[in-house]
Length: 192
Image (cartoon, rainbow, N blue to C red; front, side, top):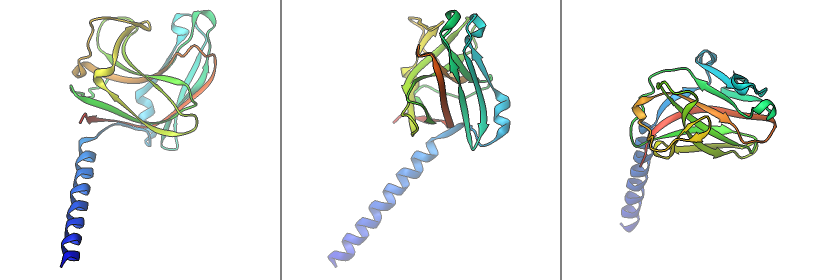
C-alpha cells in the first residue's frame, strides 16, 4: 500500500515538473532562427569604416547559425564592428529577457538594441563574455541594458522595450585581431 502511495506521489510530482517545463517553453518566443538562409537578407554589418576605421566584420548564415567574423582593427581611430537586424516590430515588453544561444572565441561582445530615434550612433547595450569554443545560452534582462551614444553612457535614458525595432551584436573590446561569434537563435521570454 505504501509503495502505491509513493509511486502515485512520484508520478504526480513528475507530471507537475513536466507541466512547469512545458509552461516555461510556452513563455519563450522566437525572434530569430538562423536555419533559414533568407534571414540573411534582414541583417547587415556596420563597421568602423563609417568613421575612418579599417575593421573588417562580416556575417554569413550556414549550418543553422549566423557566423559573425572578421578582424578588429584599432587603426585610424577605429575599433568596432557589428552585425544587426533590419528594422522590424519585435514586440518586446517591460519585464522581458532576451535569450541567445552563442558560441564565441573567449572575447567580450555586446548585445545591442536599437530604437527609431533621430540620434546618431545611439543604442542600448548589454555586455557578455563568451567561452572559447563552447555553446552557451546568454540571458539579458531588458532592464539591464544601458543607453549609449558613440560608445559612451547616456544618463537618464531608460529603455522603453516597445520602441525596440532592431537587435545586434557588437565587438569593441580594444583587442585588435581576428574574431568569430556564432549565433544559433535569439528568443524573448518573460522574466520570472
